[in-house]
Length: 73
Image 1: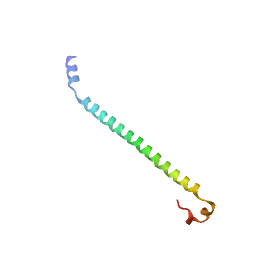
Image 2: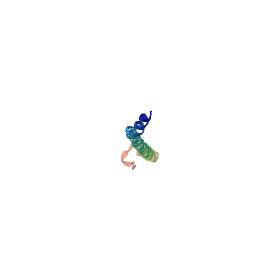
Image 3: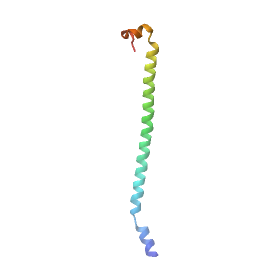
Image 4: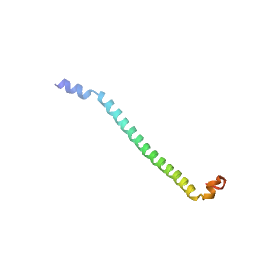
């Protein structure tokens, strides 16, 4: 039993697995944070584009709609 405990304590193969798990966890948190930031930026960009299109459509008069050269959006 003593021999088993000595070899179990001296065995460091599990340490490598723990280190890899820690690295994977850190990378996973980084990827998650990047995805959240990217999602927020995409949402903001689409919102701005939507507002621009909406403003342009609301500014157009019936005359301007028939003559595209008068629409200045």
